[in-house]
Image 1 (cartoon, helix red, strand yellow):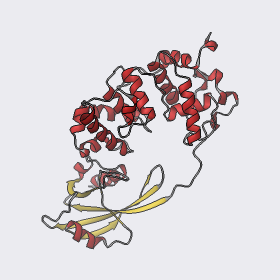
Image 2 (image 1 turned 120 degrees about the vertical axis):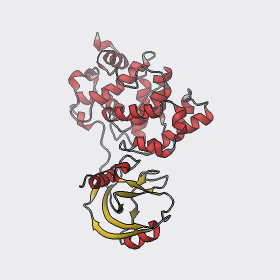
Image 3 (image 1 turned 120 degrees about the horizontal axis):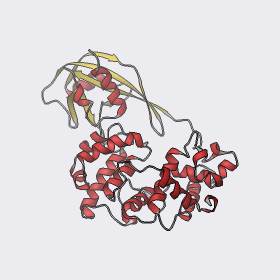
Image 4 (image 1 turned 45 degrees about the vertical axis):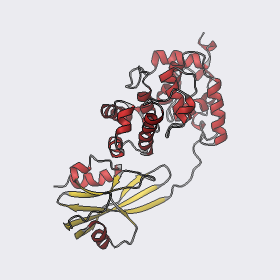
Length: 350
């Protein structure tokens, strides 16, 4: 009997028996909560997202409270979750929803796509779980599941391969049980058809899996074409005065956009002169701390922290977008993860 079921029917049956049913964003039709979870889950595992999701909702229980917040407040709660453009887009989208959609998430699929940070798959998930609409999703886990089950070769990031995947996901959409089907795809991709060591023995669609039949699971989907990541270097100034550290607001766009960070300087900068001119800080001692390595999607970054002990700060000398914070308070600010590691190491010193 099982062999006569369609792909979608197998997924739905499996999800109802073995899928996830108790995640914090399930059992709700609140589009705001579903949207928040979908954004947080982009390139981030469920276990990491749950505590952030819960804290975020405590502070911003609805779209209006999120829209009314400052970017600093949003980034502070997001700090450590990574891919910070998601937080900036979330904040801006909330403001646009309040201004143009009556303080609600749009119901229309195309209207959702006009909001920053919401792409085709995210809009589809919101429509499915909030409104019961019939749309296909295609996140990273689902790409892997479909590539294996239907034998779709190539790197999913390639436009042609992505087109084939989208057409297949549209073709497999069931006429009913769309929520269970969509959740089932997510659950299978996250917990069964995993990148390494997939659990084919418990997969409900293994019987018809092209990659499994070819004994070529590891070849589907094809990996991103290998390319050596460029290596970058930067010096960061760690100005310390009476157990306070200086933080500087980064530009709104680019890496860590809108976050507070240690000031970056080009190699060869006269740091003593710069500190005096820009921050009114008289440096009494300078030492180079161990290099901190940090990886991004498209490059690797080596950060060389320049520890500068400040003996005196001129009154009213701070430049715009600069603040001094006690070390412990700085750790709770909206700062990038590697900056937090640098400050935490200093704060832990006796």
